[in-house]
Image 1 (cartoon, helix red, strand yellow):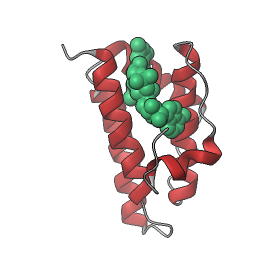
Image 2 (tube, rainbow, N blue to C red):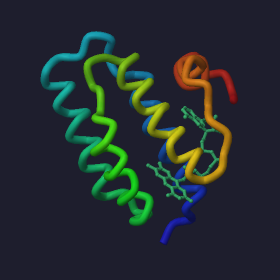
Image 3 (spheres, rainbow, N blue to C red):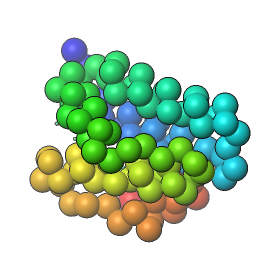
Image 4 (cartoon, protein in one colour):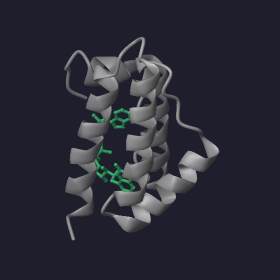
Length: 106
Ligand code: FAD
């Protein structure tokens, strides 16, 4: 199985990059695509205990796909819930765009 840490870093890069390029005014179809992608993701993620916890998280904090900011903040909070679980510091979600859209590091 893939290394859980390496897989995690790569996956957060993918997910936050999806958020950073998601439209400010998505069509109905784009919103459906994102919902379905995240739903499939939560079922297929190849760290199975991670995926199970993430599905539980998604039951409590319903995904927001209405626009880039809403999805980006939702994803940042979801990532923070994993950070807390692992004893890592929380990331300041006001810095989410700087980190993932405008390209600055940590
Ligand atoms: P990562 O958490 O991988 O973060 C990468 C970079 O993202 C950071 O360096 C920082 O610049 C930025 N960042 C950090 N927090 C945020 C945030 N809230 N919003 C935006 N950007 C941020 N590992 C386990 O051991 N157990 C699990 O149950 C588990 N569940 C996971 C569930 C999912 C859905 C994913 C994608 C990963 C999961 N992981 C899990 C992996 C874990 O989250 C980390 O990816 C891994 O531990 C490597 O951590 P890291 O410190 O390198 O930074």
